[in-house]
Structure formats: C-alpha cells, structure tokens
Length: 322
Ligand code: ADP
Ligand code: MG
Image (tube, rainbow, N blue to C red):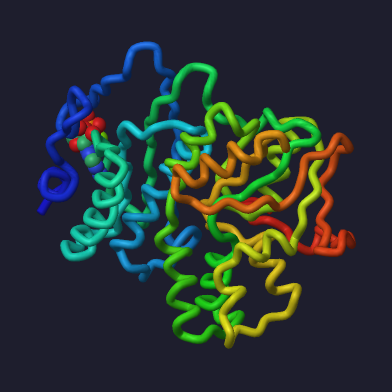
C-alpha cells in the first residue's frame, strides 16, 4: 500500500459541511457570513507527548481533542481540521485504530477532516483546526480584571498522576490507574462550556502545561495578578477521593498545580456573574469550581485552605525548552 491508498482508505471521507474535502490541492470551507475564523495547530511527537506504544485509538482521540480544546478555550464552534502525519511505516491495524479514535471524536463534534499531508518519518501528528466565532465574542487571555473570580472546569491533576505512574515514579491501585489513564489519554474538550461562556467569561485558556504556568499567561496578558486556593483546586482531582491512594501533600499539589495534559478550561468572570457561570456550566453539563481571584497587584500567589502562602516555585509547569 502506498501513500495515496493509505489516505483513501483511512482519511478520505465524504464531507457534509465543507464545500470540498480530501483529494484536491486545497479543501474549501464554508464560513457563515460575518463570522470570524478561529485557527489553531497542535503537534504531538512520539516520546515527547505520548508513549510510542500508546493505544492508537486513544492517540487518535487525543490528537484531535487537544486541538478541539483550543477552540473551546476561545469559545469557538468547530468546523474542520487538517491532519499532517509522519509515519515510520504502514501498520494497517494501527492506522485503522488511530483513524477510528480520531474520526469518532470528529463526528461527535461535527468537525470534518478535509485534508492534510502524509510523509515517512518519525511518528508525529500535527493537526490544524478551524472553527467559527461571532466577531468580538472570542474568549481571550487578555481580558481578566481585578476582582474577577478564577474558575476551572472538570477535574485537574489526574492526567499527571497517570503519567507519574507510567514513569514508575508512584504506584497506583489498578482502578485508580485506569481512571487516571483515561484522563491522560482521552481528554474531554470542553466545547459546550466554552461556547456557553461567551459574553460571561472575561478570559479563558485551556490547561495543557499545568495550572500555575498556564494561569500566568492570563495574568501576564491581562496585566493583573492572581491568588489561587490550592486546596480548592485539589478538591477537583478525581483521585483525591480514592480510599486506597496515599500521597504526600506535595505530590497532590504537584499534580493539581503543575500537572499538564488536563485540557480543562481555566477562565475568569466578574464575581457579580457567579449565577451566570453556574447556569452556563449546567447548560454545558460540565462541573466548574471557583479556585481563586484576580488581583490588582501583579504576580501569582498560591495559598492553602487557611490562606497560608505556599512556595509556588516548587511547582514548575512544563516547558519544552526549559
Ligand atoms: P499535495 O501534493 O497537493 O500537497 P498530497 O498528494 O499530499 O497533495 O495529498 C493528496 C490529498 O490528500 C490532498 O487533498 C491532501 O489534503 C490529502 N491528504 C494527505 N494526507 C492526508 C491525511 N493524513 N489526512 C487527510 N487528508 C490527507
Ligand atoms: Mg503533499
């Protein structure tokens, strides 16, 4: 099988929304008149973003999920995506499972695969995604204001727990490992929540590198500061309630404050809009938790449930070049 058979077999599907899909030099998207196009790319590199032997269906899911998550953080609605694939060889069962995981999530969000590129090389997956958002309504990192609440969606830290277990740094009971691994390998992009927060949230981003590091992008771009209640954040962690799981305080905090790969939304909203935030969360069927507030003084402070400061430099976020 060659490159073109591979594309035809696994990635060429009839399009419903786009004007033209896989097979020509360019795909043609229909963008509703007056809407803005939201565009984002994410690359996943074997050995860096995922274990080479990861379940290929999960890898397909995650490759698209991290891109959908960027649209969610912008409050955008998915339209289509392209897939650039570098493959070390043609492994039919692997490709089939990868495409299944990828296209299942794509169908769930009505986001069509419209093109891409396929080359021979180290395993590497790069997706560019396109969405649409009404002009002026995209959620940005720069809109947080002093007095705003800081919220997160879903659960934080469980993906990091699975990563630490896979790397042999900690041991987990089998059921705890299984559910943490789901969070690492099959994150849930929070698209309904992102859309529901348009006009309510003042800023948003999706958590890929760890809460504190990612939140620092919001405070820098918004020119404000933040105070985070580490224990409120910790309460969101699913594994926290596992009866047989014993970790040091520092390990719990590490997962929640600096663990990457959560793909939850962190967002800010005025304190006067708490009811609207809760209503948006209900509408999106996504739990949200208030974990702190935006301050006028610059910098990021982390406190425990008693308001006692924690030394945050211990919880560095992930940085590819640091
Ligand atoms: P070109 O040489 O014009 O860049 P290619 O020969 O690389 O086009 O690809 C042929 C068609 O297949 C194009 O429409 C391209 O978008 C699509 N394509 C290539 N690789 C993929 C892929 N991995 N997934 C989806 N579509 C792909
Ligand atoms: Mg090409």
